[in-house]
Image: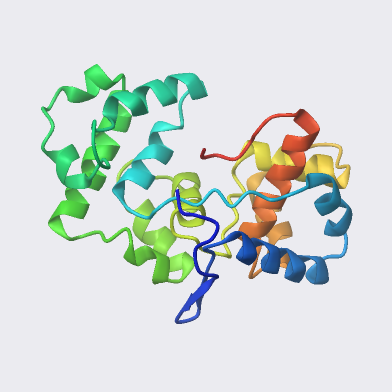
Length: 228
């Protein structure tokens, strides 16, 4: 995980990159000016976690593996997949035995997804680190073009590995529940409605998402961010 002491937000072209807790605080200040309703929510939420990981194959693979029925199962699988030394790489994944996924405890679908990503990285067709410097729409399109990578996976990768400041995973159920609780809605907004609502928080939607997750985690007394 990247340290919160890392240099503050970088600007690559027109893309703002979150790299530190200071960037989160800066984004929150902008959000409170954009939407004063968020002030009370921020007060209840407390500190907003950065939770930033290095961009690359390991980061994306971890997000995919984390989409299990339970966090304990996902953690166990990830431990079995992780090399004794160093980081899991696309090259090392491609070099595994064809049936290694069974030993890890992966489903065939997830194994196929990870293989297609690893092969794309090794062949040079996909540069996961470079996605950090691309506009969110372009980066999302490139990721979701990969077999098995849906919008939620792509958005979470761009937020927590790429450091994009303006991504909002509106299909995330916990996030939908968080917004409903924060605004006192009778029912949680569906993805399309939430995406529309979140346009008001651009260009800091990634900070807004973190804010709502932190707020709801305080309400439930447990962590809700998609990655640990």
